[in-house]
Image (tube, rainbow, N blue to C red; front, side):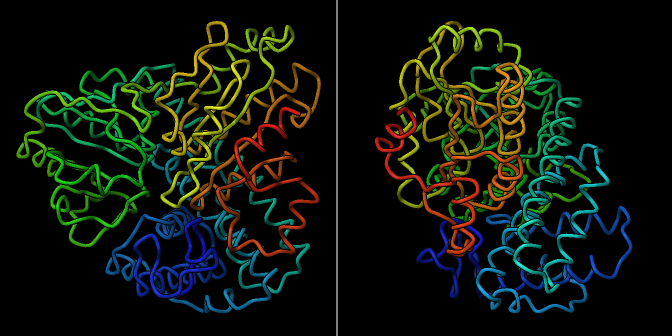
Length: 500
């Protein structure tokens, strides 16, 4: 096998014997075969809904920590005409640029999948999946591939905007919500992932069944949506960061539903209570199909019975509540307050500290960085990296909390929209705003978001905890020279550099 698509890849170079994520070599090879099959489909079939959906779901299936089930992968593989080893053995700069495009397509496919589930599609987004996949087997120059990588970022912006519209028109505009970490007595289900439609269907099917529902991981922002928070049995948020699930799910007396990626190899102590749906699969774990009948999940929760008494739980830093729901609609409604605070010196800088979390050492950087931010600064955050610090109380600037959770990774669109609107108010470019972006990355959704930021011309991004293995020295040089992208160093050094 060869795989270097995630941040934790072996020795910072590539996994060749087994995946650090827990993926076996055979599974990795099957996922490569699936990508090769999708390249053939993109090159030979006319676009239609069925074909496009197969491409989107196929790409999403190969994202890190989504599918570990060889049988389901074999079912998805069609004819192939491209050997993926050709890509992995390319000139390193060509391989680097093609990997940026491929991994960006995988991340974008996840967002397109969620929008499609709610009935929202975009012709330009769908067409680009064909264009991007075809490019992987073509002999293109570095300049052509660089342009296509930036186009991936451009189209991903459309895709994130589409998903934002799908979510807000379906579930309402998110509003601030304080969410408990405590778990009530009685049967419960933990639902994790990103798919809000799956959560909605589960809430409908658990009404009046005596089963409570708790979010986990990237599902936390669901508490901000009016059409989801109206369910009284949506109680709170279970656990901490996704990479702690093997410890936190150990013998848990509840059913666990995975709706998207961020699935770690399942331990025997809780395998019998794990359920998957959509593109997520794991051997010996029961899969809920397209009919979305969650009866087996509910029955398992009732049989397990939950905790006998309320269980007091905390975040990583000891806080027992977290706050979410600061999407662009809420933050922009507070824009006059923010503008006033900037003009009169009460607010000196805004930090966007967001992205993926992971188990590799070095991610305490983000906790320490946020703790060190001065009292006259705001911290915007999104995606699962926030679990490093989202239970901290950073105080307020005026009536606004200093720490604002903008949502899931796809809600990077919210942060972009806020930045663009503030730039209009201050009559400057986004790069001239008192805004600093500090990103953590783990998997392919972070790649497509980074490409979007680069497409928008945003400079001085700090990326960590390590630079992608698939970015060659020459490609990195271009990113540094053109966009001033830089690796994170230490919180002290980076803050000193930012604050001057």
